[in-house]
Amino acid sequence: MRVVGLEHVPAPPYIIASNHQAWYDTLVILAAFPRLPMIYTMARRDTVFNRAWKRWLMPRFGVFPISPSRGELDQRGVATVYQVLSRRGVVLIFPEGRYSRGRSLRPLKKGVAHFSLQAGVPICPVALSGLDRLRPFRVVEVSIGPPIRPDAPAWWEFQRRVQRMLDRVRRSILRAFGQRRRERRSWRSRLSGAAGLPRRAGLALHLLGDLQGPSWRGVDQHVRLHGLGEG
Image (tube, rainbow, N blue to C red; front, side):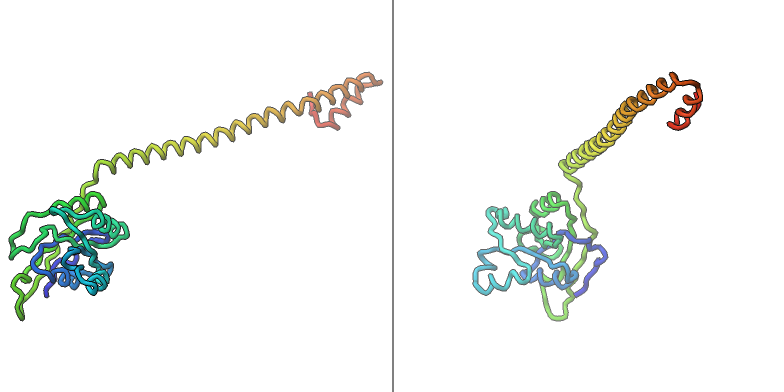
């Protein structure tokens, strides 16, 4: 087996989209790609999971059952794909849906593109050759192309706008907290100034009482004693 393009493998999560030539394509791809993370793939429930030992064995190799109807995946199969991708896993999909021969491809199903766009993960394209006519000493080639990264869906931009607005609201609330603290300090300064009035009035009355004394020397002493300063 010859593997070409391993440098194109993106960081997980991602989807492997490969042509389909034989039932053992999955084993070849598992051998070509890195061991971790585990690669999950789907198989028909009525054919691959039709025996008890298969139902026990297949999940240990990352194969989960699907029950397609009219070319569409069932709801449970779709949910499994998104669950694997949400856990930063890798999903292998054969978008042709059936076997093809050589370099010819059947029309591709739309599901692989929907998964990529909805989950926001890249697609890693793979071309298998030599498996349709497997013989001893024949070279099987696995060619990995550059990843196809999805365009951001429209609702992503809306979510970013929502987040920007929330950030503005948060900053405004924090600024309001600061304004409230400044107002509290200003009111405290006013109250402290008002609280000092009775003390100053008492000193003034005391001084006026001393003015009735024999001389101005008592006034000067009271001024110095109570720290009123000159003037």
